[in-house]
Image (cartoon, rainbow, N blue to C red; front, side, top):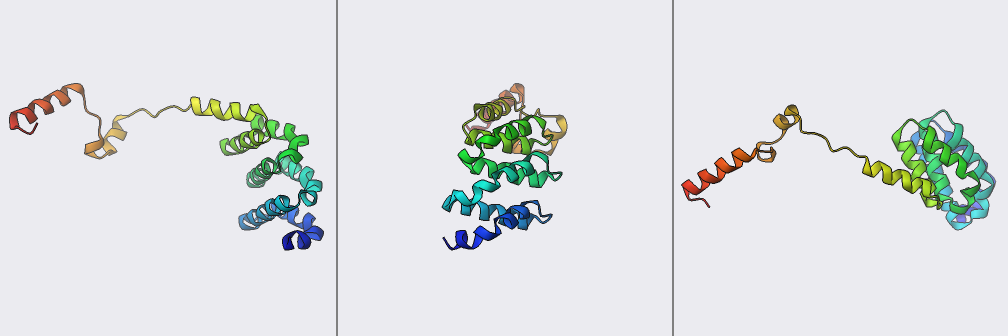
Amino acid sequence: AELQLGAAPAMGAIVACLADPHRKVRELAARMLREIHAGSATLTVPYVGTIAVLAASHRSEQVRLISIKLLGDFEDYALPFIDVLRERLHVERRRNLRFAAACALSSLGDSEGADWVEAQEQSKITPTLTSERVKRMPVAQRPISLQAQIRREILREQLGLV
């Protein structure tokens, strides 16, 4: 309650801090906006549009990232800006920004976000074991051929270790 009373006149400044070049300032502003929104959404609603603009067009990836995450946290109030999140999902170059947009869309009830996350999970390629990777592995974890397994089993039987 104290935070909300003190924040009302300074809401514009708090939102402006989202674009600050210092990470800690941006994170503090985002945390304050989440807390204020949780207590009284009426204070943050007028600024959701500004946050959507930051998410859509700010030059800094970090500012876009934190703004996208905030839109996802603002639930129904961010629904008018769902197109911004959809655009970010398809336009962003960096995977972490696309993932944040997908999560925000999903939290707003848009199936496109959940579908994107599911598609990413299915398309994960398991890394192949190159000879270099095998050489760097501890000996006990290295894969062995079927012939080597058979030879080891025969040797164990001959030594009576079975």
